[in-house]
Length: 440
Image 1 (tube, rainbow, N blue to C red):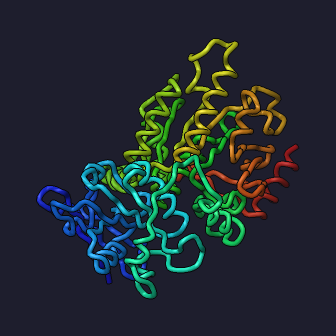
Image 2: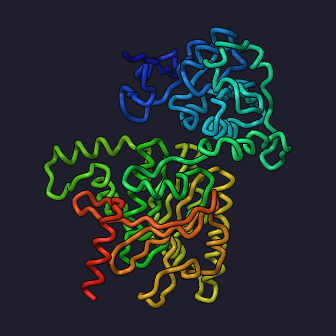
Image 3: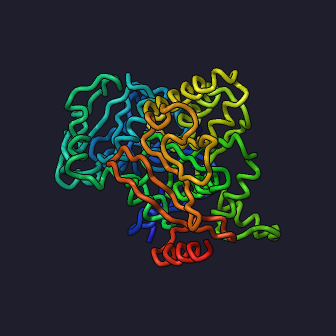
């Protein structure tokens, strides 16, 4: 059983696309036709003289609000984090926009995103739970026990991002203390469950440093993690300054298809490429030395136009090489790290940055002080992940975790056919270590 939601454009209320969603499992969803065609469900409730609308996270909520209040109600096309730039022009003529997202962590993040895109001066935010953790999550839940018009009347103009009262963060504090699992992030995928267990998932607004010696698999690991996050709806921007995009894309295509495509037929390639192209993934065209401000400008546009929530930059040295005299190396690197840290915070985007380690004794394990540059990288970061090898096995060494302080190691093996890493079982680790010891 499924339900179909039509999307309309502003031009003569033209039907441009439909969303088909299973009734029992909301994650089972299809857009027809495929591609980057956007419209609003609920646009038919808008008239020429409409001055205020309600913008909800989902179609059922939009129908609920319109049914109960008569206010024109639109639904974001694909959840709280989805407001494509192509649709913003459709909303420019409205004087007041009520943002009614789900009253949970993703919903609040989506509301902040909409405020930045639409302008806080004309937006009012509606929260069903009115500052608490109990009560209805969204408009449809609220319909069962509450007056929708009463909840809507309590909508508030959100103050400036950098001016807060305790009440503005009261709910987040309560979640930190009482609903720990709800603020954990998105899983890194089934291949590396211990990484998710240690870091408690992938969260927006964080800054992660990834390092490891040449050949340890930093790019391969990050491309796999980014694909697994994309498959869960995390819009991602890749900046590869060391490896050309075509070469990176070939690796990622095989990782996504989970099979080798070398020597594949045209049909096999097209099938894999068609599936890969549905991922919310974009690439920066920069390569080699690039001004950090140009990179930040492209990142900001991607956040605004593509709703990007994860930016991967590989790597800092290649991006900044040639942009400074040798005596200014650390200064330039520190400035870039500072700007990236601010961007992650201000735009609520997770940035994964690769930094090569210093040249040192390769017989020794890397530490936080091995990361090239000053201590600013490790000070500014939320997470530090080091790809290590002890001779017997390779493993992810989580050396910093600002979220809850958990640290640990994730041993992994490489599948040459899929170009993917998989976590090793304890008995596999023991066998490899014994084999290595016997070889010495």
